[in-house]
Length: 318
Image 1 (cartoon, rainbow, N blue to C red):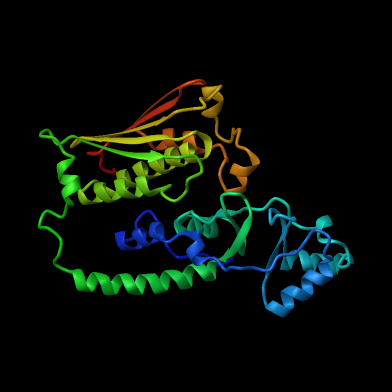
Image 2 (cartoon, rainbow, N blue to C red; image 1 turned 90 degrees about the vertical axis):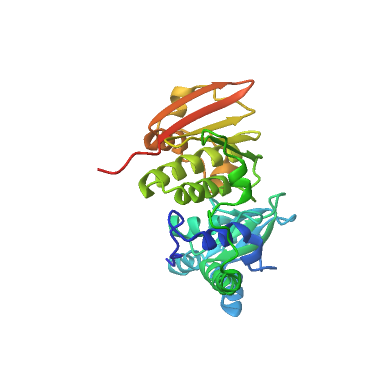
């Protein structure tokens, strides 16, 4: 399995900006070859050999994704003697996918987490529009990083002496308290994860320890993604004082029917669509509680859910 050697917890800000600026549609291969469920595995093998590719999505009449046939499926068919069978009988149907509007930070996470050589890419209507391999991501990142290095070299010295942007300076009151908000929308992955990235950037610039910053980043990401894939949208609110950070994740519903079950590791009511996108493992809220110094959750099925996770910014590792 080819992994992408980028650690999103401690990568330079220039790298993180590229990971969120570029979208999956910017790195995917398109248009792509597809096959129908009635095509034989022998036919698919010949197409793969001719075009030197290692997987073909199986689609319906409207280009909706039905499954995928990989080299491993072809090898199993040759060994098992069913190479003349239609793809529908032996294709992989539980397929992990990416959405074309996702930042390529999701690509990096998927390739480093799952042992797949490629991921089909869907549009907002769940139609197949492309396919992504780790090589696609790496080659695009190298080009983008080279451009960013050139841009940084040209702009050295343009930052203000304090190292803060005017927006960040203006957001702090006299007591040093800042409130920063990010909105989330259901299944809008264009900005998903950016809130946690921006907060980590602010904390690192404020001298908060790497260990505390890492824990806040984990909690922020889990809560943000929960809103994107499980709710009708909401707000990620960060209340920052010199010694404390409180994350308030408030969505507009639907609420959680049984909060105690939702706090159980592995429990999930995620739909097939959510699971296909790599989420729904039932670890979001438990992970958030585990890394927080204090944790509160309240939920109403009609008004939504509020999670408050607090962190002592002055904590230092023993």
